[in-house]
Image (tube, rainbow, N blue to C red; front, side, top):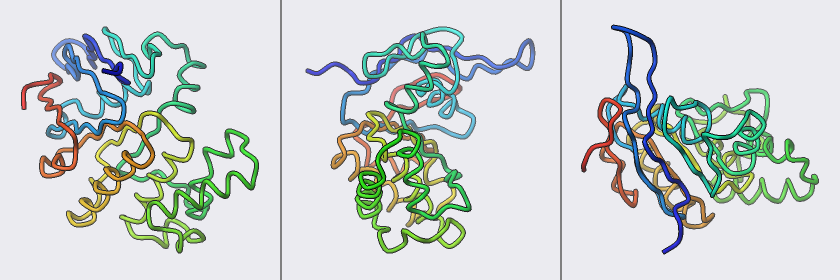
Length: 226
């Protein structure tokens, strides 16, 4: 068996002090294999977002370790975390996070510009990704001219632009109707297979876990059984 792409051990994260203290993560431990699509399932406030933020280096735990692609994330300095987020980990959020003044193609190309990719190569990669998410005919449109589902597809294409090894999606269907949400989840399932990326998707809707390889259930910061 291949080594896990993600390995989490003894993860703890607490916010606040005294009576207002919140235990966002309590001794979380799990592995994710390369090419696996894992759903993190739980109610709002259960710790899903904190878990994804710590795994991706957006937040630091109070205790425990996170290893992604052989690198101990919890031991990286700010420069190391920046490299991790540039080269290894990509994010998709429920608020899309697109740049309003840029077209769909330009939004997808932002990570490639930051890498200094030559124009021709960048344009080929952007065109491929827009085709993969079914938006090649909308390349020139700005976010305000796209539906919520189309904006999320652009966000997914942008996340995949730099060929990350790990995709973290935090409630990617939270602002979409159920039919569009399922379509976006199906797209993520297909892209995990076609792009060879590993994905951890946080959701509060158990119906969406059907398209995942397995689910991690979280309650009050603690991973529990199915």
